Image (cartoon, rainbow, N blue to C red; front, side, top):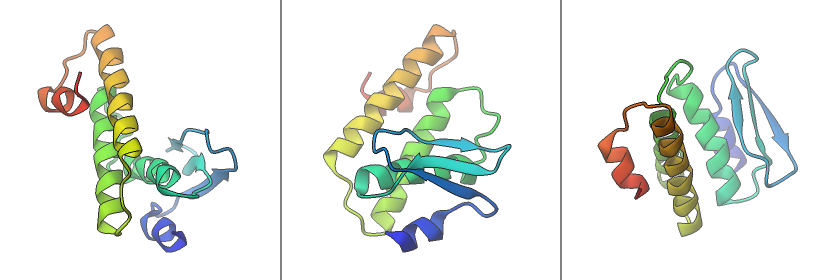
Length: 123
């Protein structure tokens, strides 16, 4: 897994791993740091790749939370498959639930929701 981590780390960014598995990820564009749990398996690898996706996809200024989170989830899952890492059902369910929460957040703000993302999130 270490080679996957190195291969997909955004250029110029440092990685700060936490030993706490429940730690969620965050990408700081200002500090050029990705914060995420220590990668120990598919679930934590997906979190790491999701945060890398925000940098690779330049999500810095996008106002639609559900859109950027959907794109980051799809990118992370695609990279895992490309690297030959099986994507457990639990990862897919968690991704859908997270994007669904982001849809509800954007709806509460009166923002438009993209139909294909709502369909994917099953909400």
